[in-house]
Image (cartoon, rainbow, N blue to C red; front, side):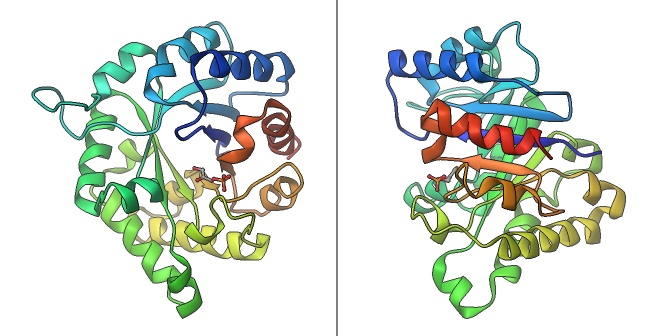
Length: 255
Ligand code: 13P
């Protein structure tokens, strides 16, 4: 059975005190996690050690970074290496978020390099994909997202992919309040799974966890997570409020 995950991406929000309180409130309301139903919290870099310390001794809830350097170490002012993240207590890193692709001009080549660097260090990767509105309106979203997946992960072998999760986040649904319909999410997730199956076969494709992200809330999470190919969510705004995040986690633990 493949893993279900709800991951919270705080983006560039919350200072250290606010982050500490949010994690405390999440932990005090959390129940129902198992090895197959996990929670990931992705705060900004400066929170990682604090968040990881708060999660120490808990089960099936992990700390993630939102980005990492593609280089192992050296003269790269302002960068954070995968080894630093691991040593600070992170187990996951988000790579290829649309905000990194758009605002920081991260292209397929750099994202594949970051993914290789993270996997080789022992971090698990949440690899993001998703199309802009004009692509969706033009009807070529399957090809667009398929190409992101091929460029991002086809360079890895099936064993490496066991440490990788995909997050489909249609850009037009991020922070807009306009969620993809459950049918749109299911169709794209099934397509992504078929792109993986083409290269690695059905067994690997069936084991791949594919998360949905984009205006996911407690009210729409049950319907989205009920789709057979949607294995949880990557949550932005609603991950900043313990009550909302716990509501979304409850939708995952209920399936
Ligand atoms: P929202 O949930 O705020 O739409 O953000 C989704 C996202 O980008 C998570 O990475």
